[in-house]
Structures are given as C-alpha cells and as structure tokens.
Length: 508
Image (cartoon, rainbow, N blue to C red):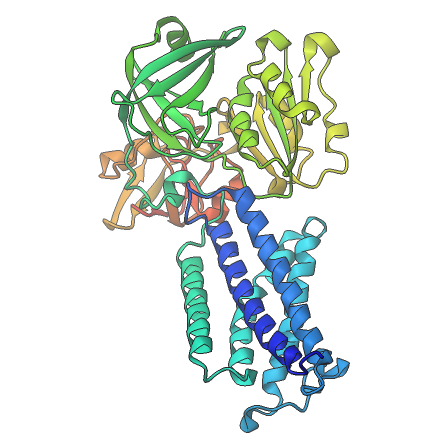
C-alpha cells in the first residue's frame, strides 16, 4: 500500500528542485546576455541549456502543485493553487496568507516568462524583454515563498541548499549589473579590456601553408614560430596583417575556433587592390614571417532559434566559421552567391558537409541575382550577411534592423550625409578639452593629446579604434555597424566619425 506521506515528500523535493533549476536557469540566462565567459562559451548550446532548464523548472513546479492537490494531508484545492490568498494554510501566523500567495504569484510570472519565450518571434522585443526581466523578481519572491512556507527550514541540508541558491542568485545579479553589455559590443570591450587602454596584440607569425581555394583566392594558415597556442577567437572575428609599406589589411578568420594552433584566412586578389591583396598573393609564401594583430570582432554570432546566412563572393569567410560552429540541430540556411562556381571558395566543401541547407547561386549557371524576397518570405530569425555593397543595401531595406547583422568589405562614403565642422572634445580621465579642426581627424587629435588609441584601417570599417562616448552626440561616419547599435552601446570610431557643435566627452 502506498505510504500516504509520499506526496508530501514529493511536494518538498519537487519544490527544492524547481527552485534550484530556476536559479541556474536565470544564472545561465545572465551568462547568455552578458557573455562574461567568452570566448569559451558558445551562444547556441548556452541558449539550448537555458531553455531546457526553464522548461524543467515548469515541469517540477507542475509536479509540486499536483502533489499538493493530491496529498490528503495538505488538502490544497484547485482555488488554493491558482487564486492568491485563497488558501488557509499558515506556517507563520503574523504573515497570514502571504507565503502561499507569493507562490501563486510566482507561478503566473513563471508561466508569463516561459510563454513569451516561446512566442518571442511574434512579440515586439521590448515587451519580451520587459516580461523576461521579471524572472529576476521571480527568483527573489520564490526565496521568500520557500523560507516562509517550507517545513524543512530548520534542517541543515535545507539551509545549506537555500544559502547556496541565494548566493548564486546574488552573484548572478551582480554580474548582470557589472556586465550589462549587449552581445553586439565589440570584442575589445567584452573581452574585459578597459576602453581606450587596448593593446594592439601584435605578434609575429609564420606562414605555414598556402592553398589555392578558387580562381583568384588563396588560403593562408599562420602559426606561431614555436607552434604554441594562438589567442582564442569566436566566429566573425578578423585579424589584421601588417604588411610592408605600413599597409594594414583585415581578413576574417575562417578556420575552426577550437583549433588554436593556427589562424586561417582566405584572400581574394581584388582588381581594385590598393596593394594589400596583391602583395599577399604575389609575395606571401610558406615559411615567411610577418606580424598580425587581433583577433577583433564586431560581427559576432548572437543566439537565435533560426539563422539565414547570406554570403557574396569572398564574404563566405566569416559565414563559414559561423555555420560550422553551430550544433547539428540548429536551424539554418545559407545562400552563397558568386559570379561562377569556380570563383567561390569552399562552395563544394559546404555542399558536401551540409547538403540542401546550402544554396549555391552562381550567376553563370542560373543567371541574374538570387531572389532575396522568396528567401526571406516567412523567415523571422536572424540574418547574417557579408558581401558587396549592393547585396547589403538590398537586405538593409528588407530586414528589420534588430534581426540583421552584416559586415562590409569596404567603407561607405557618408560624408555627404553630415555637415563637417570644427568641434571640441573632452577627455574625461585627464579632464582635458581639445579643439578638433574642420579638416582634422578626431583620431589624430586624440592621439596627439595623449589618447593613445590604436587604429588599423583608418576608414571606419574594422572597428579597431573604438572609443566609449560618455556625453554628447557623435556624427557617425563609419561603416562598422548601424548608428542605432553604436548609440545603444555608447561607442564611436574616431578615425572617420566626428562630433557636433556641442562638446563630446569620451572615456579617455
């Protein structure tokens, strides 16, 4: 015969398990949003684990409530479980019905958070975030509910468990406060280096291998002279090659992020080369040494249920690393467009690896441009694109800004969009105000007055010279990311961007 007390044991155990799962889920969500363990984390499995923990929390809360209803001793009715202050159960007389009412309220908050997560694609993001942030209050309220209504409060095992969960929650919230940065923040910021005190991370490497990849495209593998591990990186990252004649050229890493023995890039010899790609193709041979800096990243892969990747020509390089980093169960498609299949690096390799997930559109085979409207129809996930400017322009006009992520090959001339004038800038750390002339670069003015900012492309493409804005409105003339994203995270790129008539205050 079943022990009548079994349901009370189930109630107690399921409550503690649900509480623990909830705390871990919220903590994991904080890791997901702040990326404080980057670059060792992976947004895909992190999101999957966060959702699994949330789902299991709901399951054990359901078991907790069902066992209370079944247990004849507890005698909780349906109304007791779902109507605040309906239950007559009291453990602490002066608190009245508040402990149980908090449990009911927590149930509704949990349902709201979980339901909106499942409907995230259909909800405005600001509403989803507002409801999702209530999970922080949820953990706090559950702690009071457990302490005021639980029957195990005096047990040492319970006290240790409760203290551990409360401590974990506190630490997680502190982390959330200290690291509130968006995943779109540049690697120079989220890797923990203080703004404007970045090192160029210049180091010598050796060309280990040169491989023809397609017509006009060569692959290069770089290793350290002693073949020790290189710095870690995540998909979307690039390195800067320091070439003769003070040339600096950025190339996306397209190898395996888990393989720290080498950096792999693919370089197209551009007909419009200013000397960089021509030198790399004609002069860079196996065994040669050169200096590289980085890796840096402003094209990171954010967590999403579904992805659409679009690559034009050599734009496949960062995209390749992204799709190869995703778990097999992640939903994604790739459109890879180019002039001819012979000029498209990795095309056959990607088709062999991923089958019909990869759509190869070669102009000489299919004629005309790919039908982007058909590809985007009904798609509500995140779109990642790297390619020539016409491709980017087409997608910028078709995909909402919060779901579009892109990287440019070259800078867009935005000088016609702004009135270029002299302005003043204040360096907050030195309390120095300097004047920047109409024809003077802000980056040059900063460095001449102790800014010590590093730069690379000098054209507002690579994002190396990122600086944090404390006050004032910059005139964004760069091509690193959307102006809305830059303003949201409070950064600018002074190699090309400027200030307005009002004083600009920078974190230098």
